[in-house]
Amino acid sequence: MFYRVVLQGRATDDHDLGTVQREFARVTGMPETVTERLFAQTPHQLKEGASKADAERIADTLRAIGAAVTVERDLIASLEAADGSVHELLAPAHFGPPTIVPGSGPAQAPATPTAAQKMRRRLRPYVMLLVGTPLAVVALVLLAPYVDDAVSTLVPVRVMPQPPAKPREAEAPVVPAPLNAGLLHGPWRCTDQRTGMSVYWTFGAEGALTYHGDTFTESATGARDPDTPGVWQLDGNRLVFTLAQKPPAAYTVSDLNLSRLRYDDGGNVDVECRRP
Image (cartoon, rainbow, N blue to C red; front, side, top):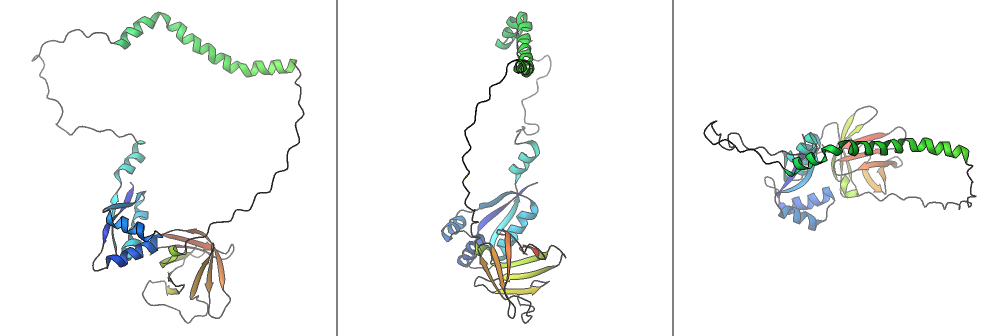
């Protein structure tokens, strides 16, 4: 079963609509003009054909900023996955044509042969010819490689000299496109893939990094710990954490979107983050 995320074009509870639109643009990375158009077209489908877990995760992220969104069953995508995009429309029960009682109507006249039936009668004497010809063609196609091999053993093949190959030009290194730092803004639940331990962080829009510990609260935890970074920066695809009394730590970001972040150092650190 598939689900879709639908934007209702309004703010929840007492949230200000303008503030919600700005937060929506910041979280999704969309321009403000596109955000205003989405909120004007209500309801508007943001995601379709998603699993229930992915749809609920996206909806929870948008509800956290005050946007009114719903998760609905995507019947079209579910039908396409179930029967290969073949939809059969059945008439409602007890709404078919009226039943005719046997003997209440005149007997049917003998049916007139259709054009297809007339054509079959005409082609019946030529069935053997029509079937045999394709079989003969298939046999020739299957035997052609063996005939070609037998002829090639009798006739020597002349090998034409090939021109020297041109040296291949060195390809320019592919520079990865810079990631959108705006997708990092907000709270994350980060799990160490080696130990399975999870902690909560908040990436501030101005570069501040707040550590909440293993429970998400509004206040910071361990702010005085010298091993806890307090500033973050996204340089290309490198995520740099700045500590108070130690050199900065840089990691490679391998995945970054609205609801998922993964970074590692190629050795001892491998962290995957999701929206709480």
